[in-house]
Length: 187
Image (cartoon, rainbow, N blue to C red; front, side, top):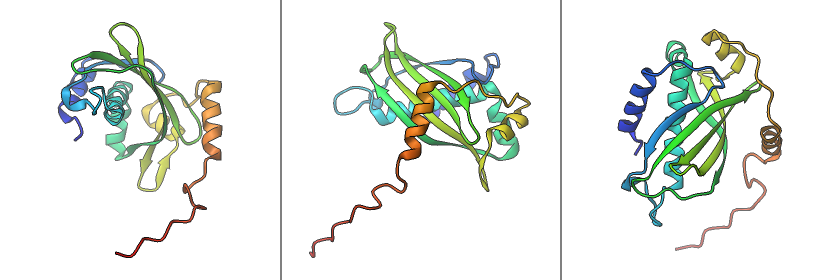
């Protein structure tokens, strides 16, 4: 289940913090609860992605994006991600999530997020490709930024993000299209 109570807390806190620029860092603080754990008693990887949602939404609120989404009846979607898990987070462990938009192109905004343990170690890092949508599909970043009253010029795309974008462009879609599906055995 989505952590709606955590979301309400984070939105309340974001509402009472100063606005930030599009590429500024948003920091949020969290704790691993027992229901966030997997069978190895560490933060479940799926739950980690859900907790990253909270950081992105707080960031979107502080940049003014949430206001524009509501006004225009636009949605926000993730179009891809790449995650690195490096350190375990255990029950009742506190951590901070750092979130920022890095750059954008003609379709997507690239967002990086990381979870940091109290001892200063990075537990995980994720790169997202995000898009704003309306009933007709993707709303281009320049339209979104114009609606926000922001400059539409992106910061330069770092090489590591450009390499990921290039690799994703080579990835087949739909996946496994050329692999035959085995016939089901008769019961």
